[in-house]
Length: 118
Image 1: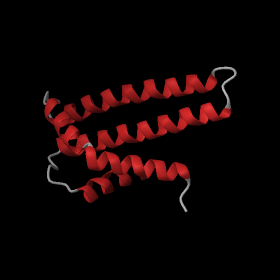
Image 2: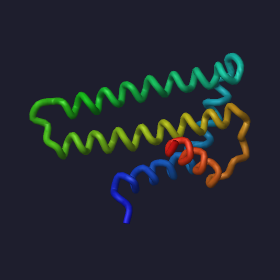
Image 3: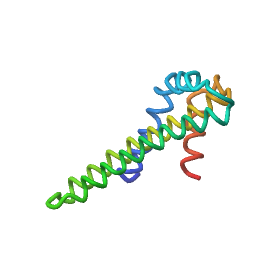
Image 4: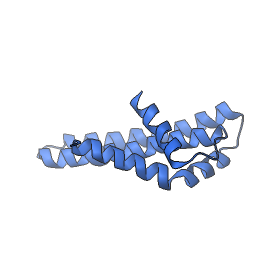
């Protein structure tokens, strides 16, 4: 039996690779300024900013005096799930920028799991 956090992460990854590929391809096309490395850096910087804000918000919520362990744990779980999806978005977008347009769900899942595991 998998731990609830593991199940949540794998579910988030599955949702991302199944339902967010078209959005990743759109982001790859929209980031058409510059060469491939510049486009990757542009997308990476954007998602890095989002992750920083979300992490700060979750940490701030957990640090508020009087907030119980349950509330802090819930904030952490939400931030973990959201961060996983955004990192999957980043991985998928970078793959699309590099021209991997025909990848199936299993191949995309392998990319995300391999990179996040590394």
